[in-house]
Length: 302
Image (tube, rainbow, N blue to C red):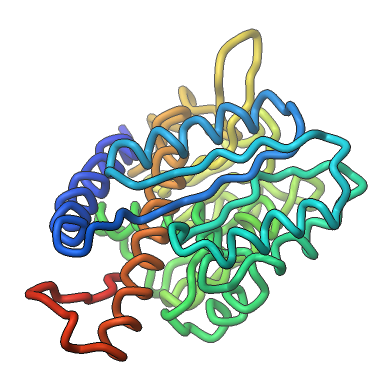
């Protein structure tokens, strides 16, 4: 029987640690960490995600701005909003909620965000840093959250075979890189991959991130596999993932639930990245003006 990888519990632990450290720094310098979230249009799912991110800021005492823009905004108008936030000293992190309307180029928008404030980790500079293992950048939040869960539960990656079902720029591709850097042998598949079940049955670690409800069944995994379910789907009014949890729970050694698994850790990673940006700024200021430094150690954690 599988052991649950509890994203809610771990994310709460991260929030508590950040709040404690943030409160001490804020008391000394009089400024909170700040996150700005831009949402374009009225996408219901995006609105839920944004609300959850703003609530997370409240939990840890961060300043936040929720910037709502109309569906018909021009690309240039959106870029202008981002440029203002790039210059705003109250803001340490900028996130543009995806997806964007079809008339807007997502890559152009992402790269307009200052890489030092790109707490979603999608700017090409941060992707490049991730590629070469440069830890000064920001990691994409969902893959970052998954890696923290694997570390917390002491799941060995070195020499393990991992199969990721899903090849998105948000989850599949960056997670593959992070797993490779941790010593795993990684195969990236998708819902159309031939003989998918055969490949899954050989995997020590299975990551489902393809957006197809209950695509992966109990017969598709081997005994004691680790199963990470990134999918979130609504079927008959209920949330479910990309794996059939009831079937797989009996066979897996570890498994993430939906909801309550990867989702909370994605938001925790966003908060962690924002706090890292905040401390990066302070470290730069104190390196230039050391006489301003108090008894705070500005050590940027992983």
